[in-house]
Length: 191
Image (cartoon, rainbow, N blue to C red):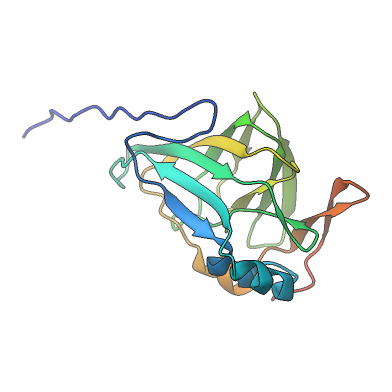
């Protein structure tokens, strides 16, 4: 049995979260238009196909005992009054957790479990948010002009379940009210 395994080295900029050697996965507004409460505003932005976020995955094997990691960059912007966000996901192995460390910008980590518990925590440079197992999560950029850049890590075998969020959404949304972020009930949340 060969137990030799190569180390993985990944470059990420602490300034912009980008990698010079990895190819990012990019999500534009056209791929996310139905995830926003104001779908008409999202469809208008989709004509320009604005980049909402991108992330870099280190390419670690998706197996038990491994740790997947990378960076996520959510760009500043809004759809109507709702801030740009990641799609959000549960893990396919529901009981697995994830950690996000904020490198730059400010935002909110929205979390929700299948039983309906909703939590949110502020992301600011130098803070880490531990997302417990069983919680769907999404990063939301609340800055008007700066990228929200986070470093993330989770068990390699956890997988991603985007479909549940695509079909149901999150129970809460984050919008701008009087120049500040506000958490409101999602008028489009499907039970």
